[in-house]
Image (cartoon, rainbow, N blue to C red; front, side, top):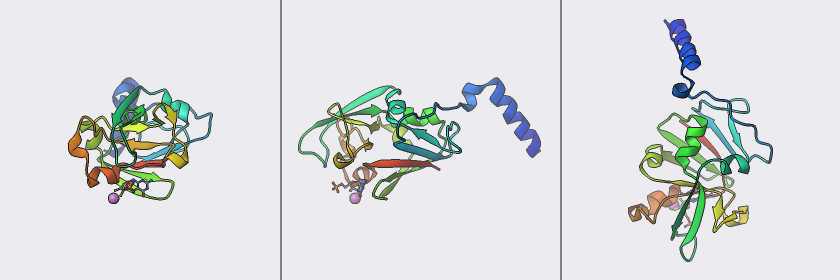
Length: 168
Ligand SMILES: Nc1nc2c(c(=O)[nH]1)N[C@H]1C(S)=C(S)[C@@H](COP(=O)(O)O)O[C@H]1N2
Ligand SMILES: [Mo]
């Protein structure tokens, strides 16, 4: 039975690649700034999906202009939607662990990224974010369109200096 299932899924992967989404990701050519591991279908280095900035920039870009607890006034954050990043790696799961340079991590329900246009920000007011400015990657919730998110639950999920994500 197990063999049959494997054979079936292999056959499915061949006839319906869009459905199973197993694709080879491009290889990073610049320094890797993000590693995604866990339950993902599309990898480029071993079991992981590694991204340089150009690969993240190649995804459709969005901007959220919003007040946050971290800056004095409203600022513009841009980058791909987290959902687009997860589509690119074929992520399947219910929870993701987002880990930062300082080893801070947050467990975030996958539903957040379906419910809200959460941005994986690479730019603040059009400029790349240095590590000193909480970069290079900052998860930004759309506090502008969903003010109900402006609380500690979502602040704690707003991880800056992101280095890796694990999909569970
Ligand atoms: N990289 C990183 N992101 C982080 C944290 C952290 O320690 N490191 N703390 C989180 C928590 S628990 C909250 S409430 C907010 C805190 O932001 P503040 O320290 O500016 O108040 O950022 C979140 N993002
Ligand atoms: Mo917090």
